[in-house]
Length: 449
Ligand code: NDP
Ligand code: 2IT
Image 1 (cartoon, rainbow, N blue to C red):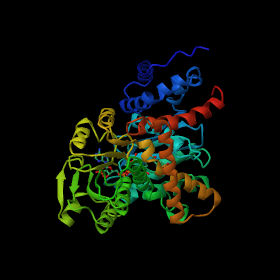
Image 2 (cartoon, helix red, strand yellow; image 1 turned 90 degrees about the vertical axis):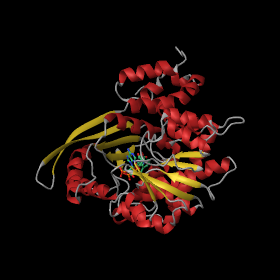
Image 3 (cartoon, helix red, strand yellow; image 1 turned 120 degrees about the vertical axis):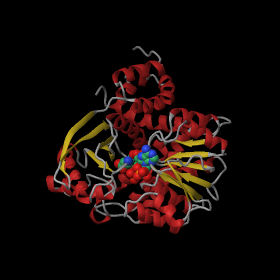
Image 4 (tube, rainbow, N blue to C red; image 1 turned 135 degrees about the vertical axis):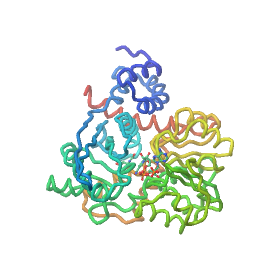
């Protein structure tokens, strides 16, 4: 056999050549390669079998036309995708994203990350991601319905409860999942758990809606405890005000933290004395039912609104990045450090640039990477699949306990590979190696496929 050591730069050169003009995919792979390649070099069974090359190539990419009619009777054409990345340890699993600027680059980075995240959940879940360049903002319910039906008319051929199980992500919440499920059921004449994040009336799971945010805070709590700290009384900033951000804020408040800022793409609110549970409930209603903007919160409760601002300049001890990719850059990281931030948790996928993540780590800020911190969402999706298969529903307490214990086990896996003498735990390395090992070993067991 050959067993030449792998070099990070040579590996990245090959990857960028094979996948030109995909900066987000390159970024996600580089982050993994930096911690996994040294591990691979100590474990030569992964070198000759070219496991990392295989793991960076999606199993398949499906791209399709989605044609629908708007309220004015005009024909609209969008593009739909499903990137089925890896099914070594379970059926393909991951969200659907609807945003006007969606590209295959974004979906490849998300599908790749999902492989490691789903492995960390301890559940049998493979990885996929999909979506469309359709923007649900400003569309009527009927337009969203017609779009979702057209989208599922093609997607249904490629998914199934033992094949690929999509869920929500940016721009895809309970309303969209309901339309998608209704159309799947109509086309296939089957009632089974082919999507997660479903309504509670038709096979959805309690705690799924809250799971990503709650899980992110549970992980932050574990990370703080491991380093002799706690959430109690800490001032927290949370970026975004969508599904992940809202339930991150809720759990922070429940565990005694103080939420002083949230945002959307138009700016940030600053609630100096900390948001109350009642104010948060008002915001959840605004966002989930009235599809409003965060500025309306500032108008209603007379707090500061900072137009076009991120939350990072507002001094806080804990930061939760829950909006979108690359929303926390090197300047933001410097601001956080200058203001005394002690820990950052990524509720969103890849919200920190590589430079920002390195800077935070160098300055001993505890850093919980997305694939560990936000895995609670897909984990409870996995529990929704279990309940669907068993044809029963677990209680809120049962599910929250299970979510908490899964986040604890993810934290333990990070410690296994991320502990270092006299330094804070390297959660990036821990999550990457633990996530990699399970999938890589399954792929090795299958032989050359
Ligand atoms: P939502 O669509 O519910 O909310 C997204 C939020 O992020 C909105 O407040 C949105 O504001 C804000 N946002 C989006 N783009 C930008 C931008 N460019 N600048 C500033 N703010 C922005 O999505 P989710 O909460 O579901 O997803 C948020 C993140 O969490 C994503 O990275 C997603 O991949 C990740 N994630 C989601 C999971 C889930 O279960 N939903 C699970 C794990 C990760 P606006 O309305 O103004 O656009
Ligand atoms: O990024 C993610 O993990 C999600 N959007 C959730 C995926 C899922 O299948 O629940």
